[in-house]
Image: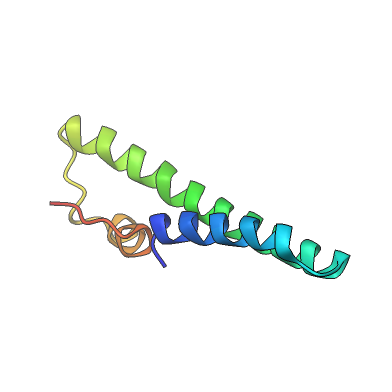
Length: 78
């Protein structure tokens, strides 16, 4: 999943929490929403850092770590 997809999943799980039939269902929905929100935040943080580095003129295309994060975050360094 990409960062935006994790964000959308978090929103969906939060909405599901209100429809859960019992406490266990609410707990599961909220915990799952938190995981997706955390992953969306990680992707957004990376994306913001990438924009700063690129605008400062750094060449990130050769960085294995950056290419890996690009796949995870759903972005691509030009």
